[in-house]
Amino acid sequence: MICGVDEAGRGPVIGPLVVAGVNFNDDSILIDNNVRDSKKISPRRRNELAKIIKDSALNYEIIKISASDIDDMRKIITLNEIEVNVFSMIIDKLKPDICYVDAVDVNAIRFGKNLLSKLKNKTKIISKHKADDIYPIVGAASILAKTVRDKEIFNISKILEKKLDIPIGSGYPSDPVTKHFLDKWFETYGYFPPYIRNSWKTTQNILKKYKNSKLNSY
Image (tube, rainbow, N blue to C red; front, top):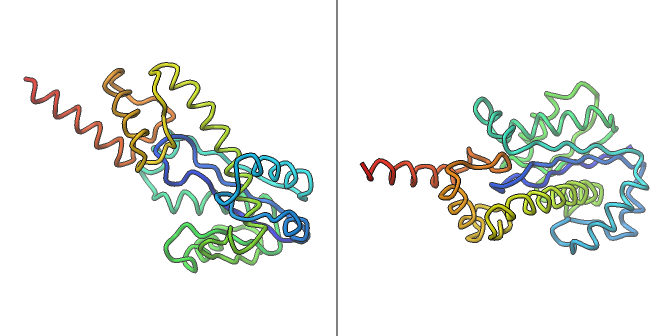
């Protein structure tokens, strides 16, 4: 039994981090459906493939970590350590013989070793960068993670845009639309909603900006 594990939403300042794992006896059905890195597939096709993957998989597991939980955990551990913990939880739940993972650490071998140190089950770990583009089983996990996160972001955007009447953008720190949204939100309300990662540099810079402007007004 083989398994693939991948995540979606590591870098964004808005929304949850989603980690998915999926088990198959072999990857033939994934190859037949051209399953690959979710970022290289259109949203419509991702949703189609997500249904195929869920219907044909032996089993799968998805964990969502909210923005506020990420902020809380980052007070004591790194983002890499958070992902090691969640990846290992999923692998232990699925109990595969071999698990292919998309390494989030700059050192893929180290990420694999860190995973192994957390596992309760005897699972062989294959840890590589861009594994979602190399192994269809990891591509399947990336599709599940991405489609779940996309739904979360869609729901978040409906809630937040209704209160400010401007788009939230992609949610990535480099997106000027997202930066503008966060700046206007804080200017309007004086706080960030729970869907926003307060520990990110983008939000920290906005907090400093308004704190300094408030001090300068005295």
